[in-house]
Amino acid sequence: MSTSPDAASPLPTRNQGLPTRVPTGRPGGRHRRPEAPEIPQGAPPLVLAVPGPANPALDEVVREVALLARAGRPGLDIRPALLGEGATDLTPVLGPAPGSVAAGSDGSDPDAVVGAPEAGEAPEAAEDGQAGYETADVAAKAAEDAQAAAGPAVVVPLLIGPHPEIEARVRETVEASGRDLLVTEPLGPHPLLAEALHERLSEAGLARADRARLFTVVTAADGIVLATTGGAEALQSADMTGVLLAARLALPVVTADLDVPGSVARAAAGLRQMGAERLALAPYVLGPDLEPGVVEAAAEEAGCTAAEPLGAHGAIAQLVLRAYLDAAGIRD
Image (cartoon, helix red, strand yellow):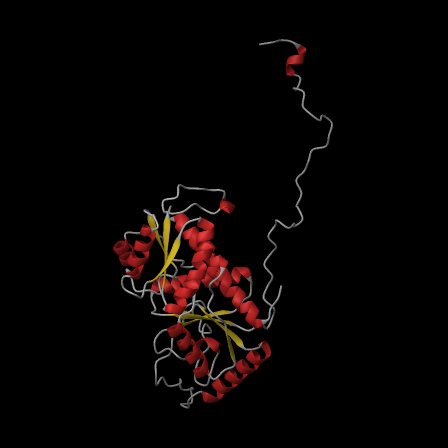
């Protein structure tokens, strides 16, 4: 060990004598995401029209979509409503009517998917033995006045693309409500849905992840079958999304209809004729709205590896929110 007096001296450092730099809060810039603006007070509710059949997985997707949409606009009043076959009553989600109770006012989960009430259900009797119509009428009138001040509620069908049968069910439900409601178009086609499909494929190791994530994997697929439901109009809409997806992946994309037996297998055969060998199935559906096993059976028949359905992807919530804001006339 050195005994030199300089041994204990500190080593020289650069920029000696300069003040220590203390980190401070940075102002927001163009690359910084601003805080989400709150929904204006008195804005109309968003009725999220959910196609059935009801099941726990679909309920979970709806809850997650509602949560993500509210994160984009704090204070947003979202009221999910299940539109299964025969469900044509929006009273449980649009507020109290004579003899009924508003959804969520009894302490129930406001994001639970609400279906139609049982037919012939009688109003609860008041303590004096008379039906509580008078009190209910007052509550209903107050709710109607509040809704009139806020503007008509906005019904956003949870549809990725056109689906004539479900859209007819939505129109029937809106007409049966006897209320002034705004109904939006299906969510797609839209570039955000192509981005969501890309992410689902990359999560399954079937495509490169998008460049924004700075993460790549070996591309396992050299051809994509984009499978949807809803008939010819839905298939045409999926073609547009397929073009966007093909541009992102630089791979051929062919659409197919999960409702038509053999459609996915025929699309896969067409891709193989183009020279593709490793095929992936991209389900252009929410997922829980289908009968169990439909995607898996189609993938097995066609010899494809299937990615996960879109589910509660953030793109779905963004498009739901955008549809609502445009219809309600709410701007940033």
